[in-house]
Image (cartoon, rainbow over all chains, first blue to last red; front, side, top):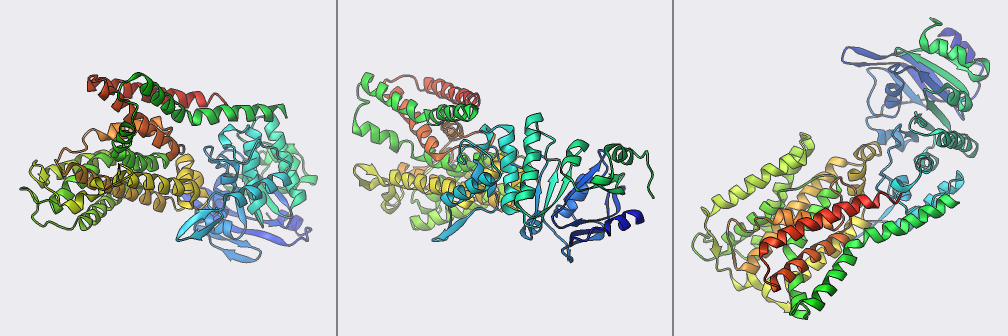
Length: 261
Length: 326
């Protein structure tokens, strides 16, 4: 752990997110133990690990789905203690869920604005501002170079890649400080995965923002991440600069072939 | 680009299929009007609308529940209870309460009880996470039981003329309650399509996890849906008493399946998240037209059920055809 600290010190960018000593139990199972790391401004961090290593648990704690049993999280130096994902989202931490969290029965613009519908009060009724939402959706999707037949088309009838674009469009529109991508490519085909990765890279260029990218696929991680954090049995077993490591080393860390203490 | 063009073409097909119930309704009315003596008259058309008021109102309540991904079987019993209870409160015949309340106080009380039944349903569905089918099946039975208990199984009649006003007052030959239904449809259509509450109902019905993830107060929305359903059912019962100048404890029996049929024919998905009151209104009118046609032809009423069941089947098949046009 100390070695990583020394390596990180080379990075002089300001810290956006600081995770300190996070521990989480589910019953008697220890899902996370003393997890600490930092995410810098304008950086993509890859979070890797085997099934059950604690990746999703960690992301759910950062995004406010449930609290840690021990440890602290700081966003831009401020200690945060979210009780719901809404609170996290309100201060600029946006999560893209594995299942995309799309409402297939609704159109792209409704999906982009779930829970944030633009409305005005008319005689006590919250009347939706549909036109405005559709306009903003076209703008957002245009920014990341996505073609869909219409923002009024139900997502159900879009292709996998188009759906992904709608889901990612949300964080282009709403993410301000940190985006958490929970296995965004897990449910996609080869071409769609390519598109999704390109999208992530495009968004990086368009927007100054930090991301945590979780994936099983090391190739994807190496493509988009600046640094890679490896979890094993709920512990951080390695933090590596992408340029100074290779997939073999990461695999060794994931599987426990290399012990770092 | 070709893929986009294909998507656009499929969109047109789906557009047609989405409104197919209106096409079927128009075709049926034309066919009945040209082949059945006595069907083609303004009087009969008004009759068709007049006879669809109760099913129509309950269909609004049921549509809201179904779109949110739930089911409310208690609408029928609540309407029945609303009818007998308002008759009991305001009526003057034997077995009435003897209170002879003002009809609007009766309406208010019945609406409040509808809201309570909705809260009861919502409580067990939301807090205890019991499937809405089971919870509302129990209230379906319980509420009907209370209705029978209230008057010891006897009917109540002889309502004051002020109570019957909603039925007896006519404008352009149509009873006031027809306008009540039309206003309800316009209002609840607007809420469902253009209101944040309506949008949240669709979101919850489509993907409840997404609704939680993005901070929608799911419980609050669902409570409102069930309370609304109870209130509309109560109002429907009150209107039934106004039309019949009384009520029996068995009033509205069998409405549930007619309501579900109308809603499904109207394009509301039992899986939740899909449907429109525009379609539901057509579904209600279609059932009422068919009923009227068979009535005029003096065909056994039992045939009606076969036709109705066939229509439900057609609606379900059309719904799955829609999915072919991705």
